[in-house]
Amino acid sequence: MRLSPRLRRCCRVAASLLCGLAVISAVAYGTALVFGYRFFVEMSGSMRPTLPIGSLVMSDPQPGSSVHLGQIVTFLAPDGSGVTITHRLYTVVHHNGKTGFRTKGDANPVPDPWVVRFPHQVGVERLAIPYAGYLFYALSQRSTRLLLIALISVSSAYLLVRRIWRPETESLSRRRRRLEAATKP
Image 1 (cartoon, helix red, strand yellow):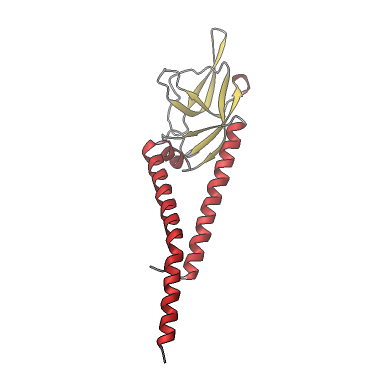
Image 2 (cartoon, rainbow, N blue to C red; image 1 turned 90 degrees about the vertical axis):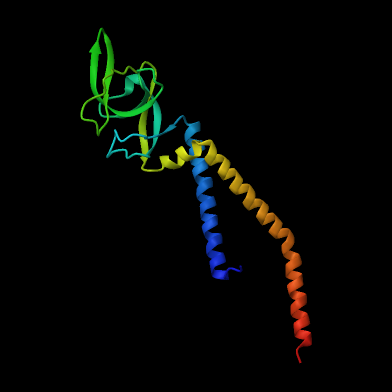
């Protein structure tokens, strides 16, 4: 199947734009990691409408003493489950000379049952990109990464084989045209 020159040109431009976007995204992600930013995917609806499900949340580690009410923070659940939670600081709690925070998801009717203390650092939300987290979540899955590697490998092999065989088919086409031209009266 032969593509028209216009369609071929459109495919090349689209592929170039996608590759450029992938490179720029990778460089931006790497740069953010170097400067200490961390990325999390909002997997529940507890922060809707501020953070829709699937949002990519970029957080900046800040000292626990510098956070204040109203900020969106990312922390490990204090119940020991190891779950990462992104909620808003709702109230300050003083108990036995220690300061803690009660958190609450924007969509939740009541505050979380725990009091969170941030002795060292806590991730403070700096940027949230709605629905971009789905891509990060997909790339964190082994099957998706294997599929992506297989797709790139098969595409590369196809292009290399096509490049190797192409000169032969072009020269055969030229010979055939010369023969046809020579036999026409």
